[in-house]
Image (cartoon, rainbow, N blue to C red; front, side):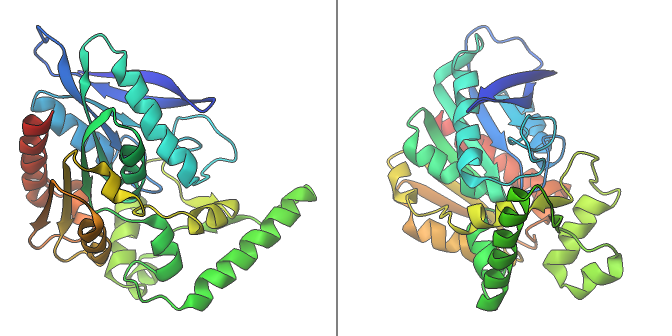
Length: 302
């Protein structure tokens, strides 16, 4: 059963979907907070994982980040890593007082960029008892170094220069527009390589297109993102358990590998053979084994 909920995150009302198992619990149940990929909304990958895990008996909460989807915040589409971390903690607060949730058995799952945001949230919030990621990305590292880690350093410097210009323009009451996130055409997307094309295909075609998912972000997002460091304090999660899941074909998998090396025990890394980064958002061939592993993980740790 899915219901619409709202909760506060640093003064902004966030919109969420709360999934309850079909059979009514006789006692309080474990619960899982699930964060969506960058540019995504709760109706996409986060909602798919929330629904699947609810079928396995967990109470799950997928929510739109502040400034995005149905949640409050202006400018629209802003990607603010500090607030994204706070959003996870606010979602935990919401679940911790829900009458069907056991507040001592709350876990968290982050997908893509949320796989980076969930790490500092869990590192500093001991109410999160078990942490998992799927296709984890440190969005700051992706902006600075590229999805494959090979980006020309001049690119981020150029973006930061534009972001600085945008802030001055805004102070004058003007705008230079937003940062476009996806190519306009399939031809342009394919020219950008597999990772760019798969992101375009997921967000811009009938595969998973949603009217509220972000197509652009304010330039003021860029300097906020660049100064962030998602995995710096990952070692603080231990001795609480950590599970990281990534596709062997994902161009971003190096970020999961590096984060996992820095993490303290107990920790586990699951590779999904044949899967790319975006494949783990919605392709049943890859989502099914990921959810099976997540189910076992949360059942044994919550």
